Every structure is written in C-alpha cells, then in structure tokens.
Length: 303
Image (cartoon, rainbow, N blue to C red; front, side, top):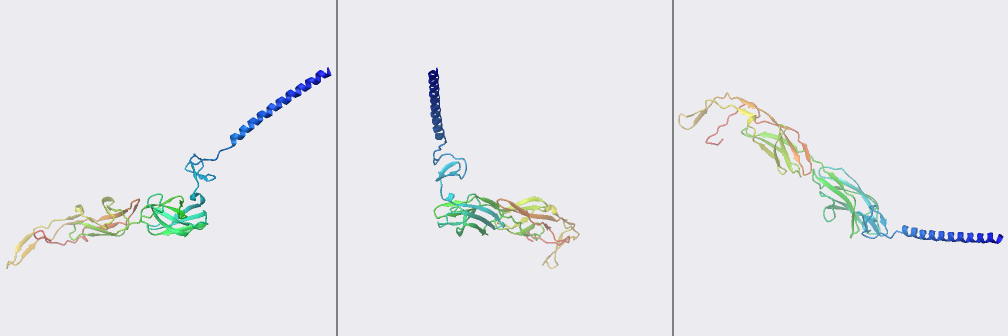
C-alpha cells in the first residue's frame, strides 16, 4: 500500500512539473510577443505625424509630416506686438528666446500689404546681430488706410526662419481745410481742400447726399448743378438807346428784382484702399454772398 501511494505522489509531481513548464513556456512566448509589440520603429521622413513641432531624433513634425529638422527648429522667437500705429508709421516688437548664437545670426522684421512677407519679397529692416531678448523697429514709411502684415525673421546667411504673422491697419485721417466759394457769376460752387497723401478717392456729399466721387490726386470739385438753389428774377423793361452823338449805347432796366438764395452743406470723405476715412467737418456754400443784387451785362455772348 505504501509503495502504491508513493508511486501516485511521484506521478502527481511529474504532472505538476509538466504543467508548470508548459505555463512558463507560454508566458515566455507571450512576453516575447508583448515585447515585440511595444518596440516602435524609428519614425521615417515623409510619414504622417500628429503633434506639430514634435521632435524624434533629427526629424520634426511639420504640417502633419515628419521632415528633417532644420535651422528653424534651432531657434525660438516670436512677435510680441504692433503698437504706436499712425497714418504712416508703427512700431514692431519681437523677442528671441533661444538660438545657436555660436553662428553669425542677423534678425529684423519684414512687412507688406500681402501676407507672408519675405526677405526676397517685402519691405524688410535688419536690427543687426541677433541676441537673446527683445528687439524692435519703428517705421514711418507706411501709407494711411491700409492693411499690413508683419513678422520677424532671423537668418544665418543661408537659411531664414520667420515668426508667426501679425496684421494691423494704419489710421485713415480726414481731409482738412475744406472751403466752398461761389463762382463769379453765381452759377456754381467750388470746393477746395487739403489733399491726403495715399488717398484712393474723395466722396463729395451735398446736404447728406452723395453727388460725386473724384480721384485721390484731385483736391477740388465744382458743383454746377445748383439751379434750384438760386432764384433771380428777370430784370424788366430792358432797353437800349443810342447816345446823342451815336458814340455809345445806353442800356436801362428796372432794378426791382426778386432774389432768393438757399445755402447748402458740403462734406468730403476720404476713401482709402482698405478702409474709408471719417467725414470732414461740414462747410456751407452759397451761390451769392448776400441778398444784394448786382447786374452784369453780356454783349454778343461775352460778359
């Protein structure tokens, strides 16, 4: 009996050992498989990527694609803002946080009416040798009422990197010194004003209604559609008689003439390429200085 029980124990131990060995072998296989699954191959240039700016060795994620890292990836700089914006000027400010300063680097700003100004296409100004910290530039070479785009750049002479872009609009001033004078024969009103450099056009309003638009190079306008604003009665009993020696002609008429003069108000607005300026101060125009009547003679069509 004891020998039979001993034989059973040995058999059970052998079976248990076999099960343990099989389990270990299975775990080993699974472990190797798991290890194989977590080993990622190196990213390959041209493959898709998810996080913009992510680095993997010599590659960087740009626009969803792994590309070889370059000069742009060695510098960290950005635009801080645009201020002191006027009709013809503005101040740009940027900051450089990190760069391979062991190289000979130069930085500055590029701006243009169109986005993405570059050193090749755009108005650019260098601020000299690059240094960590802020740098700025003030320009006075802009035109009023225009949209502009500006960004900072840094270059090592071969490669160029640019910051993100900022946009701004220059101020759009109104005209000044608007005047209105009537014509010599009370048949028109002439407007004159101080023109604005960079204006695209001028919009003329009479009593709140648009009546004309003139080119930006023009600084005057003649309003001759004013028949309804001045009513002059016709002189009665007009007569012409010869002098006694036939050396002159006497012209006579009744001086009791009805006169009615109605003033009008004018405003001029500057139109710029990207924005309209404010209206000018209103100025009053009349076809005659007063209700007093003067007479002018016309002979054979000549005053």
